[in-house]
Length: 117
Image (tube, rainbow, N blue to C red):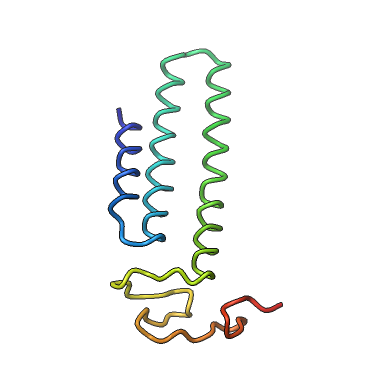
């Protein structure tokens, strides 16, 4: 029940959050925790060692890949110029500038926002 509740919370978060970055945070964190709880419940239900190893492998794979995939998608969205939520207070990628300030290139980036070698 806990895993299903977290999966539902992730779905509601994706629908209710205002921008791509907050939606991604809601979906990755809540769905990973929900899947972990569901896998734990399945391991306790089946009870044999083979099922536990398979379910633990699935859980480890999800825990290793979800944060990396979320980070790469968020970075690609940010570099593509996807707008932040209008009430965003701090844009940490811009070296501590407030989100309301005009777009100034970050050190190491050209005028188009691409990272220079």
